[in-house]
Length: 493
Ligand SMILES: Nc1ncnc2c1ncn2[C@@H]1O[C@H](COP(=O)(O)OP(=O)(O)OP(=O)(O)O)[C@@H](O)[C@H]1O
Ligand SMILES: [Mg+2]
Image (cartoon, rainbow, N blue to C red):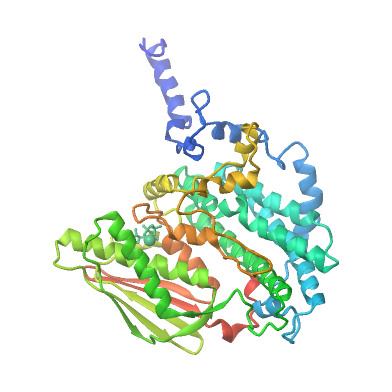
C-alpha cells in the first residue's frame, strides 16, 4: 500500500505514471511576475486559468461570436485581398514623381494606409490562426493575437478619410496605436517563442521562421505608418517639398558617431555590471571613417548596439577569465561599396563557445530558452501587462493603453515617444531601443537572431566568423538604400 496515495502498489505505480504524464505546472514560468501586485489564485496563476478557458473572460474579440465574425469579415474578405508591395520612394513621394506635397497626396496616402494596414494585419492574424492551438493559445502569443485583432478592427472601422481634417484624426489615431499595448508586441512575440521552445510546442526551425516572418511584416507596417505620419507632419508644418527621396524618417547617419555612441553605452553597462574603474577595451575604428549614409536611425542604433555589445561582453569576460593586464581591443572596419556598407566588428575574446547551429535561433536550446525567459521576466519596465488585467481588476480607472505604458513610468525606460504633429517631432521604434537598453546581466539570447532579421530586411546580411581560441569577426552588411529606392522594400508583408 502506498503511503501517499492509499492505493495498492501496482495501482500507485500506474497512478504515478499518469501524474508524470500530466503537465507539471510548477515548471511553468512564473506568470505572477507579469503582475506583481496580484495574488496567485488557488495555487495556479490566473493567466494559466485564462488560457485554459474556451474564451478568455475579458477578451474583446475572442468570444462566442468570434468564429462567425472572423470567417465573414477577416477570412472571406480582408484576408483574400492582396497587400500592395510598395517602395519607400512611393510612400515618401506618394505615388508621384514630383516632390511637392499637396493636400490631395496626403489624403490619398491616408486612404492607402488605412486600407493597407487592415489587409496586412488580417494576413498575419490568418497566419496566427493556422498555428497549432497550443501555440496561438500561449499566454504571450494570445496577447499578440488580441492586439492584432484590436488593430484590425480599429483600422477597418476607422471612418473613410475624405478631408485633411479626417487625415489629421487618422494620424493621431495611428500615433496612439504605435504607443499603446501594441508596443509590447515585440517582447511578447519573443517570449512566446521562448515558451513554445521550452514546452516543445512547435519545432524550433518553424518557430524561427514564424518569428522572422512576423518581425519582417512588423517592420514593414511600422514603416508605412511612420512614413505617413512624417509626410503629414511635413505638410502641416509648411514643408511643401519632400526633397529626401526616402522620406524624413530616413536620415543621414554618420557611421563613426553611431559606433562611438554604441561603444559608450557598452562601456557604461560594463562599469555598472562590474565596477566603475574596470579597464575597458580600446575601440579602434578603421576604413571609411567618414562614411555617412541614409538609414533608419533606430535600426542602425539597434544593429550596431547589439553586435558591439557581444564583442564588449566577450572581451571583458576573457579579460577576467585569463587575468589579462588589459582587455584586448575591439576593431571595427568600415567598408563602403557602391551598393553596400559593411561593418566588420572584430574582437580577440577567444571565439564562440556555443555551437554555431543555435546561434541564429530565437529559442536556441531549451535550457538557454529557459534562461532567456527568466531574464525577460526580470527586465525592468518590460513586464508584460496582460490585456486581461484591465478587466480582471475592474476597479482600476486606467485604460488598457495607460496600463500598458504604466510599467514604463518612473523607470529609465519611461516612454519618451512624443509626437507633436505641429513640431513634427517623434521617436521611432521605441520598443526596439528599449530592448537594446537592457543591462548586460539580462541576457536574452536573441540579439543575433533579431539583428539578422533587421539586416536582411535592409538588403543586407549578418555573419559571424569564429576563430576558436582567438576571436570573432561579426560582419554586418547593409544595403545602400539610395541605390534601391524603387525596390519594393515594403513587400515583406
Ligand atoms: N563576439 C563574441 N565572442 C564570443 N561569443 C559570442 C560573440 N558574439 C556572440 N557570441 C555568442 O553567441 C551567443 C548568442 O549571442 P546573442 O547576441 O544572440 O545572444 P546573447 O548575447 O547571449 O544575449 P543577448 O544579446 O540577447 O543579451 C552569445 O551568448 C555568445 O555565447
Ligand atoms: Mg548579445
